[in-house]
Structure formats: C-alpha cells, structure tokens
Image 1 (cartoon, helix red, strand yellow):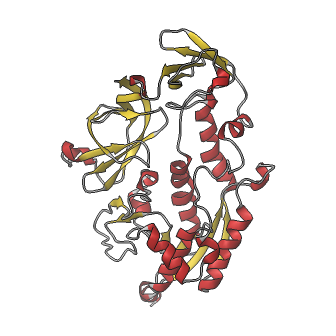
Image 2: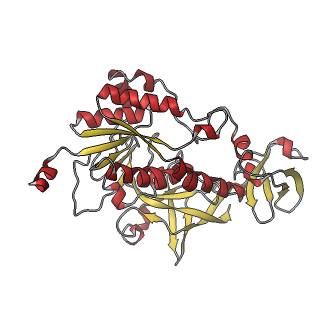
Image 3: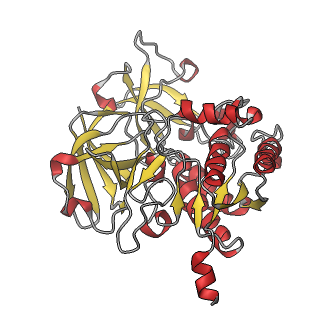
Length: 384
C-alpha cells in the first residue's frame, strides 16, 4: 500500500533558487505544471571572505525567498561554502598559478549544483527531480514529460542560442541528467522576462545579468583579486625568439590572447603585444605582435579523455562529419577532426580557434545541437 501511494503521489521537484529571474520563472512554471515544488537557495561563497562583500548573498537570498513566498512554496537554504572553496575555488587558483585558464562555472556544476546539491535535494527533501534555471533541453523534455526508464537521456542546446548553457553542463552524467529538469529550455530569454513581469517578479526582472565569476564581484579588477590570493613571482616577457621586452610579477596575471598592458613593457608596438604562450616552468610570458598573429590561432590541440554524456562513446557511433567542438560558450561550435589515443584525444578544428589555452574545456556537439560532453585541453600542439 505504501509503495502504491509513493507511485501515485505528485512528483516533488526541488528547484535551485538563485535570486535571479531565471530560477524565479522556472519555479513558477513548475508550480503551474502541478508539481510539489520546494525552493532551495545555495550559499556557495562566504561574503565575509571579501572585505567589500562582492557577492550580494543576502540580497540574492532575500529575492529568492520573496519569489517563493509569492508562489507559496517552501523556501530553504543550504550552505556549500566549504565544498565550493575546496572543489571549485582552490582548483581555480591552482590553475592560474601555473598559467592555465579554467572555467569555474563548469567545476561548480560538476561538484556543487549537480552533485552536492542533488544529494541534499534527494536525501533531505525527498526530491523526485531537481530543477535549475539553465538554458538547455533534454530528450526527456523540459519537465521530464517524455521520460523513459529504459532509454539513455540526451542533452541538447537551449532554444535561445545566445543563452544556451550546455557548454557549462558538459560534465554531467546520465544519472544526474535523468533527475534534472530545465524548465526554460524551450524559451527565449525575452519570453522569460515577459513571464516574470506578468507574475509580478519585479525585483528580480530588473536585476542585472549575473555575468562573470561571482566571487570576484563588480568592484574589483580580475588581476587585483588574484593578487590577494596568489603570491607574486616575477618573470620575463619575451618574444618567441627569446628577446626580452618586459617584466611581470606573476604569470597568474596573464591569459592566452589578452593584450599585455604597457606598464609591463619596455618596448612599444603599433599593433600591441598579446600573450601567445605561458611557460610555467620558466615563468616566461611569450608575446606576439598584434591581436591576429598566427601564434594565437590553434589548429591542433590535445585534450584529456572526455566525459561523454551519452551512455556509450559517441565517436564510435556518430559520423565524424557531424562532430563539432567549441572552447568558449560565446563562440559557435565548429567542425573538427578528432583522433583517439589511449589516454587523450587530438582535436583539429576546421576553423583555427583563437586564444585556445590549457585548462579550457573543449566541448563536443553534433550538427543536431546535441551536447556530447567535453574534455580539458592540456596542450596546444600546433598554431597557424
């Protein structure tokens, strides 16, 4: 009898409430669909860590609570500060110390939103499904309406190409996706804002987009923030032929493809000098002349064996002509040639990719907008 009741009950969906418009509208849509909705706000960064309180934690929490109150759904908070520090922030710092560029949003999804958060949602709140405001879709539908227990689930780009967030979801697993809901997947951002206005979510619809890395905040320069956590380690700025053209106080201040500030240089160039390589072993930053220099465009790079979202290796089943890759969310996927070895993949994009850097993720797609997963770049093998 208990089992029968469990099967017939209204599915409970725990929704991650960020305090923004996307999670607010997601919660409304879930409630409208008749789910038993519980709002859960994640606290991932200790605002006391920054003297200026960069992440508006208390405001976001208050806005999330306000939306839940308006929708008459329970509101709770969960503290992941320790987990975020250990699994996201420290990794971020360690990579910048050695001149690698990482994407904290991917690590946050991997360690926090789809792991720690899912566990709390299931174990503490008895969730059947866990929802977030990501712009993405799956083969099971935005509300799991096409769910089939015997089938693998597939991840697809969201309907709004400018907001699609599958790039950040490249490390999710079958198990995680099968309990995930993305209520906004089939909506344009403009539609989301319109719904928010109609429902009276005026406080969140007027908030600025959450861009960049939240723990850095809006009042600090990225370089100044890094200096607070990474000790200076002076080094040289050199051209490819070894000629020194300047000095720096830490390779963590530089990323591939960025223009080098004149304060570091003792030479000038009409086109400007740009970072083409960072050598962590010597501490040298290698510069090239001009933002479109051939050294800035990768034509082949190596990545660690990827996390594949499908239940089997898609390279074995999908035609090579249908495989695309991207290394930045804001850039469209491009056709590529992929070769497998025992421990890594070699990727040759058909269009040279600018500012490709070790530490970045290479995310694979099909020509049908399916996100297949991704792997971390560890070596640039060839440039133009």
